[in-house]
Each structure stands twice: as structure tokens, then as C-alpha cells.
Image (cartoon, rainbow, N blue to C red; front, side, top):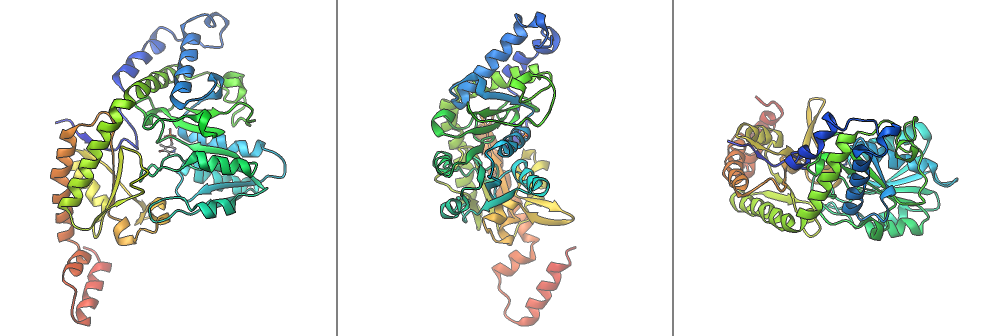
Length: 409
Ligand SMILES: *Cc1c(COP(=O)(O)O)cnc(C)c1O
């Protein structure tokens, strides 16, 4: 049986149409685009077409505002390096507690190596940005703001057009990590006012190792790599032609299919949520349900080890992610759930369902058949769950439960 794959925020299946578009650029059209004889050939033409396709998908005003990179991580790093090229006297970056590691780790590095100050804005229990704290973080020293368009764990959407306007009023550049949003919701980079926008091929049914950074005309960027003149000198190195062609085709498919697929995916996602909440006690849907990607649902089960649940589901050929990571032996809820102040006993039971146009009702049926059963069986083995069901009446019982819990079998 085909596995039920519900981990599309981690990566997506490359569309067979994308593979088909890429193949000739491995076998036949393999010239270096910088070779003089290639300048009139299919390789150069394919790069032009792919750039236009990405331009259309993100609503950029000009094709030369699209810079191809090796993926979301490089695009984020390149955008943050732009802060260093910004006006003198500005040495602060404003970001949020729930960004992807590609932004947060890069900020930390800039802080350590360049002496830049990073102001990290908190979110509320729904993962929504604290707007007051954001406005207070902006100031005459802010060089760049980096705030994601959609959170990869909860799907929560951030109002980037409003946030970009506030950043501009403070004289700062605005970058958005739109890796989870591009191809899933309509984007109009030109109208939204963002200066820089990151996207990644493998999150939208394109290949891994290819992405792009939208750079609004007039924004000066400092390249991360030094070398040739490719990508306007911003990203030297022989172009990943098959990858770029694949990203271009993936962008065309996303743009043309989004109108019909968006509603269908949302209905499947909502079926999962409703079905689980109806069948399982104390399951909580995390994130901002009013402003959320149509494909993402993060559900936290009290008194359940989310990683154990993910393993049971994997054995039943259902692929999902957990909202916790094993940091040096101890299970730690993700930085996103901690930023939302989700109680530990709930956050450790969080799992993420993320859908794509490849999913259908049979995947949802399998989730709804498996998850409630596995949650019940894990809870039957959980001391914390039994205690929550039958609160102990005397102190000796409390003591013995505490002992059992700190010495798991
Ligand atoms: C996946 C992801 C990235 C990293 O993209 P890669 O292409 O895998 O480097 C960055 N930001 C977000 C929000 C992501 O989900």
C-alpha cells in the first residue's frame, strides 16, 4: 500500500512533470550557460523562462529581481547578509522567536561575529506576533527585519504587508522567509512591499537544492560567495540548470493548480482535525486557526509522547512529524511551541500533519483510523494520564506516582 505521506512541510514529492522538464538538461542540454556558444541555445532560454515562472508565482515586478540559490537556507542567509550592506549606523536585526533555524542560527552567528544586535519579538499562545513589541523593537538602528510569511510548524500566517510598512517607516529593509507560503497561498511581492523574500524548490514539488531570493530593485546586497558574474554577481557559480528548470516548472504548476487545490487540501486538513478532536479527548489544535496555511495542522495530545506516536504511525505507513526534538537525550518541545508557552505536558505530545495536492481522502481515512487508537494505547501506558483520570486521594500515592514517572521502564 502507498504510504500516507503527511509531512509536506518537511519536503514534497517532485512532480513527475517537473522531473520530465528537468531530464533533458542532464542529458542533452548540458552546456555551461556562460559559454559563448550556449548563449543562443536552449540552456540560456530555459534560465530566462524559469526566472519568469518564479517571477509570476511570487508577483515580482521584474524577472531580474529573482536570484537563484541552493535553497531556502541560502536565501535566508543571503537576505540577512543584506543587513550588513545597509546604511551606516544601522546594526540591528529584528526577528521573531518562531523563525526557522535558517534565520535564527544566522542571526546568532551575525550577533557573535559582527557584533550586531538581534531583537527577538515574542508571539502569543496562538503563535501570533506581539505587534506592540514589534513596534517597540524597531528603531533608528534597525537595518533589517526578518519575519516569516507562514510558520512551518503551525502554519500560522504573519501579516507581512503591515509588518513591512512598519519596518519601512523605521527606515529598515524587510525580509520574509516565505518558504512554506510560496505555492500554497497567493503572493504578490510587488504589492506587499517586502524587499526580500525566500523560497525553496522542494517545498513546492520541485527538486531539493534549488531555491530563490526575491530582491526588490534598488536593494543592495552583499554576496555570500565570491566568484564569477552569475546571477548578477550576487550568487556566483555555474548555475544549477536542471534544478532551475525544475523550480520553474514547479512554479508554473503551483500557480495554475493553486486555485482548485487550495480548497480541496483545506477540506482534507479540516477533516483530519475534526475527526481527531471528535474521537480523542484533550487534543488541542495549535496555531492561529483564522490565519493559517490551508495544508497544516499541528495537534497536541496531553500525556502522549509525540515522538512515540510518530514512530507508531510510521510503522503503520503514515508519515508525520513531531513537535519535539531529542536534544542530548531529553525530549524538548520545539522552540516554536515553547515560544507559544504551550505547557510541557501538552507540547511533548504535538504532531504536525502537512498536506499537499498529492493527498486524498484515503490518506485522511488512514490517519483517522490510526491516530485515536495509538493515542489511547500510549495513554494507557502513561502514569500522568492515569493520574489525570483518577486523581490520587492521599499523599503516599502522589509520591509513588512521582517516583514511577521519573524512573521510566
Ligand atoms: C524548509 C524551510 C527552510 C529551509 O529550506 P531548504 O531549502 O531546506 O534549505 C527555511 N525556512 C522554512 C520556513 C522552511 O520550512
